[in-house]
Length: 316
Image 1 (cartoon, helix red, strand yellow):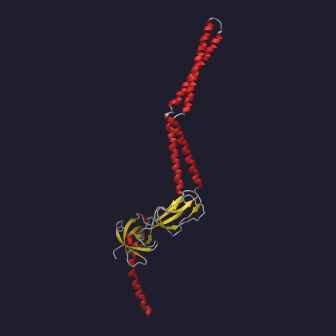
Image 2 (cartoon, rainbow, N blue to C red):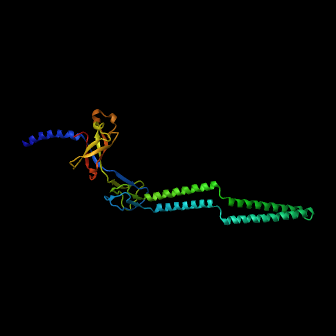
Image 3 (cartoon, rainbow, N blue to C red):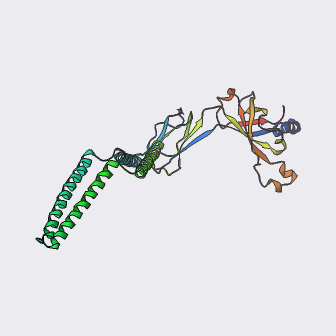
């Protein structure tokens, strides 16, 4: 008889709970998750931090093998040194020894021209006196002209060495040096990226790969859960969406904690979770949900992630 009396009481109690549950958006507590991916297909050589440990910004999480990248960096540095030396050669001009040698060739050519000129004059006089044939005079003339051409060539060479390099060549050398410097910076950055460091403080949540494994390019090698105040990620029913806007102050209930936390709506999705919403009937549209995120106050900093959370959609 007592059991029969309890059933109506339970039936009366159930409707009393339903309205409250319907006026709350359900979800979980979350924290920002920072993922770190590999930039090269290399082997993991070091995992200095264990999963679940606290990490600070700048702590090393994973070290990948860097031998190949160090070789590429060394090659780029050598190319930079080569380009720098070539530019320095163009801007400093020729060596004093080369200029002195060119000047000596000019002096020698002048002496040869003087000798050839006098020889031609002597043979011209002898031809006029019919003591030599015309062919001897012609040979002396050719020798004189050849000596004059040698002198002109020596003068031009000396002028080239003393005038310096062309501005176009210098600009080209500077551009080559700039390109080599950029290559060095790029290879250095790639080398630095093989040592993966934490960009935010938090808890090292996951290390998907083991020591000695080769990771693919863009493979996630570490996940850090930021050690900050959690936020509630909840689903808001469509009939409450109009009043549930960013900036609204709400109460957040967390399982296991009697006192609700103060929250501030920071973001609400513009699209429902079930689509296409335009093809739904009025009854079906009432079941649409909008994902929203609610910031909590400093008092919730100790709450672990993953707890069930409920956000009050109306005053309770």
